[in-house]
Length: 338
Image 1 (cartoon, one colour):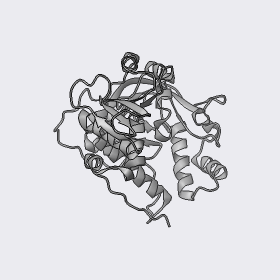
Image 2 (image 1 turned 90 degrees about the horizontal axis):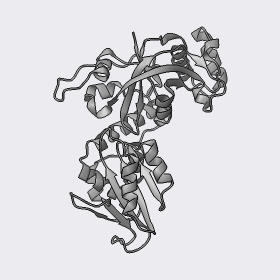
Image 3 (image 1 turned 180 degrees about the vertical axis):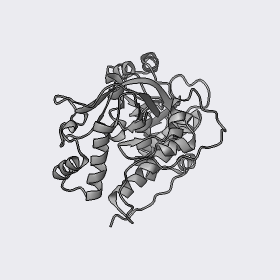
């Protein structure tokens, strides 16, 4: 039995679809039915014809992942996908052969395998070594047994000695001094490391970070002291006092693995007045019902999950003030491509 990582599209955009439809899929919109390519060589030729701009190393990498998805994954194998919005790994068992669904709404979902999802494992519950072992940017790869054991364990004891995990079983092209692929991998590793650092902030520091983002966007902010805040952790406005429009009331929930539900959104909205604007940040994500409540709110209300929060930090960090930078010290680097 093998344990596979199948990523849910770029940025994990398909993670919720994977959960709800009990399946995984692999993007091959220009290739068609992967079952029509019983040999790696034929699939390499198909990828090369569909994507002439790819280098030969990239062609072989893509073809290898597609071939594995169609022909090497077996019923009964374990499978994992990552949801960056909830910072959780969805874990389950493969229950079906590769099938082709020509009328799938998303072209990248036409080649599918059914999955019985059994449980979720929060990224923050894993050891640093295991998190690093899951950090490959490859769409599909074999997860090492040591990492698999943590993903399927009932609990992970803090302070346990780290497990040495060999590099992931990925057919990577030979290293080159500088390539677009290596730059992309470096960027992805940096984003993951920054997200992990953000996740370790305590709830009050998270409020301060959100306030720092708003100041980076040009607002002045008031941050509530620790304790009961009656649904306004941060108030942002042009004057810093909340006396001029736009006046943004911000609620920040930093709860790992716990999604905000509709009643919490209704409670937040109940304290707002006409003319207010709402921003609700939840690092644990939101339920579908909570998003529905936000869509039909009587005031403008924006929901921000963990992934969106991380993107906002990266976008506005160059304009962070000293207080915000102290919460999350980062250094910009430059990576030559040629």
